[in-house]
Length: 228
Image (cartoon, rainbow, N blue to C red; front, side, top):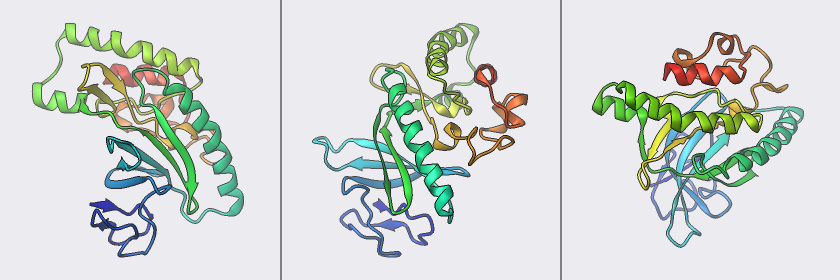
């Protein structure tokens, strides 16, 4: 299946071989390269899709993150684009860490902004908890030893994750290492003019009190990790 990422498409599912959506007529591949195959997440300001990189020799999978702004004014879209480009650079720097997904590309297409990131194959901690039950003390200490250095790294790059939870931590199949995922677009622009102070981003049950008020700080990530 090829999935149409046009926000208001009524029937986004299309056959693998199609290059244009049967429902809305939009081009299905992004940059004539990335073929979306499944919707895997949606938030107030962004959507996430699983995709295939059709130009890679192995037809490797990747993740598409779409910044979704509904009918923005020209000024708002221009500001969003500027912020997007700034944060894409920062996200590219974060992706050099072996336990953070690599940023593969970023671009604008059809008045939508996109990030393409490495796909991490593995199970989330949420899935592990469902299958195996709660962790014992030894396992919790091991988890903290793995994840705290990642938080130190992203905070040193002036990034607050804002949505740390079991579903955003994956145990990578190839080496059994924990990887922190879902550095979503909305999280990175919460403190900007577009998403002004008071906007709540994250999962409420894992959020620190100050984050619920729209004022996340570095310690908010530590709080979320502790709840996790």
